[in-house]
Amino acid sequence: MIKIKPTIQHTVVCPYCGIDAVSNRVLWQGIHVTVVATCPVCNIETVADLPVGQALFTPYQVNVAANEVFGDKAARDWFGVPLLESLRNPDSHCQVAMQVEKRRKVSNAIILNCLDYLYGHSLLKLLNADSYSGIDQQTGLVVMVPACLRWLVPKYVAEVWVVNIPLSSSRSYFPSLHAAMEKELIRFDEVHLSLAHSHPCGFNITNFSGQSPCKLNDPSVQVTFVWREDRIWSGRYSAKLLGWFGLDLYWQNMKVSFLFKRLKNEIPDVRCVVAGLGKSTRFPEWIQDARVALFNEDNEKTTCRIYSESKLVIGVHGSNMLLPSAHAWATIDLMPDDRWPNLAQDILYQGENDDVRMVSWRYHFIPLKTSLSQIALLARTTLLCAKEALMQFEQGSRST
Ligand SMILES: [Zn+2]
Image (cartoon, rainbow, N blue to C red):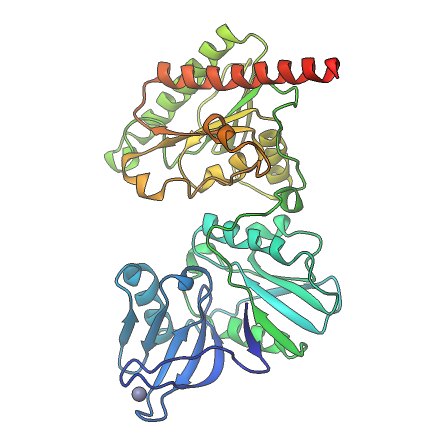
């Protein structure tokens, strides 16, 4: 954690002369939490990232007046330059509404900033909350979340600050949001900033969704395909660009139906479900269609329950696989060619107390172009493995 009140415990170095700058104040940009600092030698003011979230790895520092960015090349285009651009072009017209929900009165606060322009990144930041579930009574966790994540905020959180801006606008700088943050922080004696790790571990997903993940010894023989319409199980990743988008949705539907049919032939009691975002095309009645046109709090909860009833979930790589993998016993992640560098970023691993060898059975990453018959074989084997293990478990229970 980084203390930011009553003093800012972070040193900003002047990018021009290398001398420690004087930290003047915290600036709440949005995704970035920054420090405005002045070099005592150059007398130049810069704005520097506090090392939280992505800035733990690629912090940036900008000179707004000189239009300069300092920092690593790796994330410069999507993280560093947008910081500079946002500060050069603040959105002063939009009055951001921050809804403050106070659940417990505390004198000290830990701020977990979950704002991000990508849904998956926001969700992953929120999972850091579990690190603070046992903090002392005087200190409370305060989470800043976009409205779409409000329903996932754990009960033990002291305050929830819901920021009503679209995810896509989270890289912008809204002076009204900064002002709202400063106004709320007056109430606290001490304020720390959570490091908001980009892919935390050690969390309990039940604290967030309210659903317990499917266990090996749960009787479920359910397989759920996670449907999305902007990244399709078609082998043609850029179908939308090629103008085959509508056709590919029907093709995806056919592949899901064929996959389920093959599983049904070999495991007659398997329950087949399709869930996720988008309701294009229709499925035969023997496939439970739990897809939604638009997510809201109610159907998000229902969908998570479906995932938690699934022995296996299958879907195309992306943030759509985070909650499914967190709740199902096993996952098959279909990887487009250009997503391999992002391997496992969309998986919320479960079963920390399991034998580590079980990971081989629970999490599969295979090319999107893998044939349907190979995927069916892998799915069948995973389900039967679980079923056999369950039988052994039950026999073991009876013999003891
Ligand atoms: Zn300097």
